[in-house]
Structure formats: structure tokens, C-alpha cells
Amino acid sequence: MITEGMWVLVDYASHLTPGLLLFGLWFALTPKTLPAMRILILLAAFVLMRDVMTPLGMWALGSEVQIAFSANAFVLAMLGWLSVLLIMLLARTAPDLWRLIRWTLGRPGIGLACGLLVGCLIGVPLRIYQGIDASAIHGYWVWLPGMVVLAFGANALEEVLFRGFLQGYLEQHVTLLRAALISGVAFAACHAFLALSVTQLGWPVLLFTLIEGLACALVRMRYGVLPAAVAHGTAILLIAVPYIP
Image 1 (cartoon, rainbow, N blue to C red):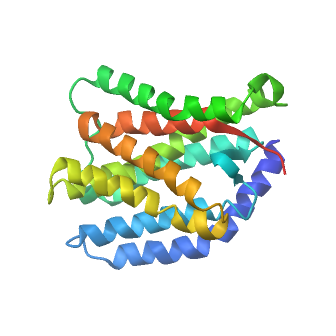
Image 2 (cartoon, rainbow, N blue to C red):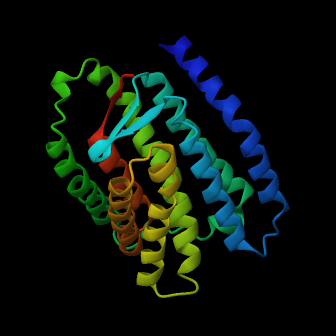
């Protein structure tokens, strides 16, 4: 599993590196006095990181918003931890944007509980509708720990970008509610290429990501980025299954 997973990650890195180098150069050349542009560059780079996985068979979207991730738990865990490392790298290389993040607001315990509840409200109905039965999926319980790391690690990175940087920046210029709405719509819009070109699944993906994006944005507005990441990660974890080509 580990040897095979290493080859998958090397293949992913070889496809991704040229584009990331260009985005990194673009980001480095953009002055800190243009925070909105720097945020948009990071969002575009993240979209590239996510969408390159699709043709490489690292994950797949099916009809009715079925999400399948690599059956190799090592690959999932490494991608999750790499996302956490990227968050740490952003804290060091972009302190101006890092200051926009509000990790928790109000009482942290209530916020985390709210994030978990919102994630369940999104994920449980879809899991029931799709008829996901863990006991009937071969290797599900071996695969699950890696998926947990990916669900919360990778989606924490996504929430840092959309709810930490983008929404935090917007709150300095518009009302809190409008900032949340823009963040949620932007999140869905950044899935348009995935929905309409990479997978050609169309509106179901956009509708799901709009609902998820708005829900996480509202959680962020009230309780902070960390509860929003819990909501996002929980929802994805509940509807994910191993990908078997």
C-alpha cells in the first residue's frame, strides 16, 4: 500500500509542480499592498491542486454528488498532512493574510458542536439517500482513518483560504452577512470548472457546493474558521467512499 501510494504521490507532484511554481512566482511578485489579488492567487492555486487529482484517478465525483476518494489510505493520509503543512507554510510566508483569520468566535465548545451539527445536517441526508452502507464496502474500515485525515486536513486548508483569508478580508469592507454570502458563492463558483468541464456533472455539484459553502460561511461568521472546518470535514467524511476504478 505504501509503495504504491508513493508512486501515486510522485505522479501527482510531477503533474502539479509546473503550475504551482508559476502560481508561487505570481504570488511572490504581487506586493502585500494588494491582499485581494494575493488571496485570489491562492484560491486559484488550490483549485489547481484539487482538480489535477481528478484525471489522475485520485478521486472521482459521481451522479447525485457521490464522492469517491483513492482506496489507498496512505495516499489520503499524506494528502491530509501535506494540507496541514501548507497551512503552516502560509502562516510563515503570508503573515499579512494570516492576521485575517478568526479561528474561534464566542464560546469555542459551542462553536465546534455547531460545526459538527451543521456537517451532519449536510452529510447524513445524502449518506442515507445514496444508501452508503459501510459494512457492504470492501476495505472501508481500513480506508477510513486515512479518509479522516484527508477530510479534516484538506478541508481545513480550504476553509483557511475561503473563510479565513477571503471572508476575513471581505469583512473589512462589507457587512458580516454579505461577506459570508460572497464567500459561500465564491466557494461554489470555484467548483464550476470541476462541475462543468473536468467531470461534466453540472448543476448537482454546483448546488451541493453552494449549500455547503453558504453553511460553512455562516458558521464562520458566527463561530470562526475552526468550527467551519469541522462542518466541512464532517460533511465530506459522511458522504465519502473508497474509489474503485
